[in-house]
Length: 329
Image 1: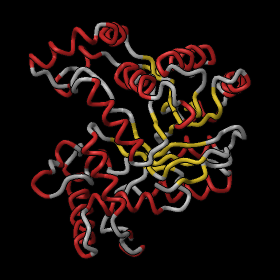
Image 2: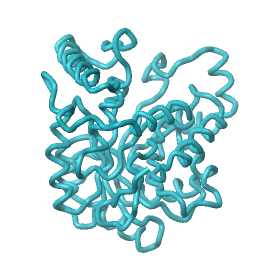
Image 3: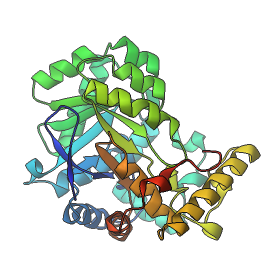
Image 4: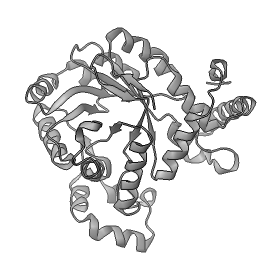
């Protein structure tokens, strides 16, 4: 696994990182499954782990904390804050060991639960909340610092105002974080982040199906000497399945979007076949090959899934021309 510079921080990060949103939760397996996944990541050369305080109500961070106890300096840990979970989810997190067997016995699934039952989170990027959130993350991670602390999907206007910078600078001086960045949902938020000198990184969605943001953000990041974390490299699963296994209705909100995605996927599938690779392999290689991407996050829920992704990347690279936009891209 190659190492890449992370902006101007001096950190060396693996070209692939583990996205830890799937670690833990009521609807998944026992913690041992995730311990095996983290071990497979380390064995595969991954040293960058991206989590957040809201992932599985904090269990994702706790699993990383246990996994890296005694070898903290071997990995780069990035976490995020800014979302506040509703009280019912926080309560459920405290009694998760009791609820998990019940959820399995009843066969409950996350997508079947209504928003009224789950509760909707809200956002808070005030200095006081960010400090409280980071200190809670440090306890779960069993460490005295994180390598990267990110705002979690803030509106562009919040990024622009920069009222959070003073708090993060204070936390940096206290040694509780080494660098800070912004996990962005929009190109506008990323561009706003580049206007603040202290920003070390931005995180954005980068994949074959949505190329516009990357084409705009990557040059600006290079000019600002800011690291780029690429997420949703498989378009939340759209680029991971082919043919009959893919249900576009789950991913698209209207018939027009389904038609456009179907054309894109058909075109890229043909390109992948012509180059002797799978659609997943083409998608992963596209993100990994982009100049300016520091680390590409891969999400997995099992060690076998992760090993498969790493094997896809290790195979011979498709030629650069294979990544040209497909029809409708």
